[in-house]
Image (cartoon, one colour):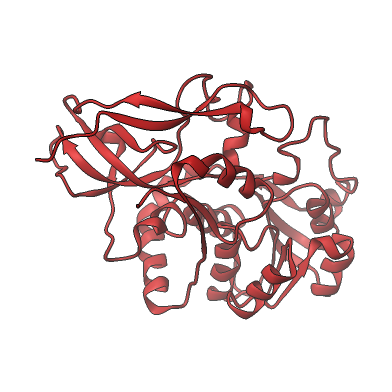
Length: 339
């Protein structure tokens, strides 16, 4: 066996951001690497994920997941290669999905690692279309929003890792119309021409309410919310009676320094008998086998498409994260260490 590395670079949170994260809030530091203890594996990370929810974990507030600790390595989804194993069932050379991203080498408890197969899809796909974002889309559309054939669906942040999958899944399951919003004309073109959305608009080109009403003249039955704010208010106005909204994210307010106003038209929820429900993907783990089987089939047939935005090098991890928050990604934002 080749010699193991002695050190690893890893990103630490060193200050809690106020508003937009600054480069001074994070530090790339060296840490010692040792052989794994019993029941553990040492993984060379090939890719790690940056996701919007990580912004919330930078704040020291009680939430559904603990905040990042100061002067400790941050974590998140990662895919890598096992380079040393002291755990039954894992061998050197295996590829695994685990939760210790933001670093070059990870000492992972084997019980928290899952083998992945690079012959089914590229390894990076297990952080996106076949990973947490894909399952979020699947569970949020079919289980939380109770999608049914013939529904008209609106997706905000539709060119992102989750939104792009929601729209395509809805089309594959018989949606009558799928509308998406995105932050550039290039992304709007992608939604219609590659992902098969029936209509899409650039939310920067005018009021969302007006653009949505034009794109969905007969209203919408399902809204998948990744943005919040103006988008949520517009969706409530356009929703038909007994409409359902999955509230997945509110990226429009993650970096706000003052309280943000809620939708001004919430009274419509009563007369329209609307259902607005939040989603945490961890609540839907039981769907995982069904999700992987169905989505893998769609990928194999070419029915489901996905994009990734890869940023090369661990030293660019912070830039990738801020770029994600600014909407600079198309599809899943991933940091690649596969040099």
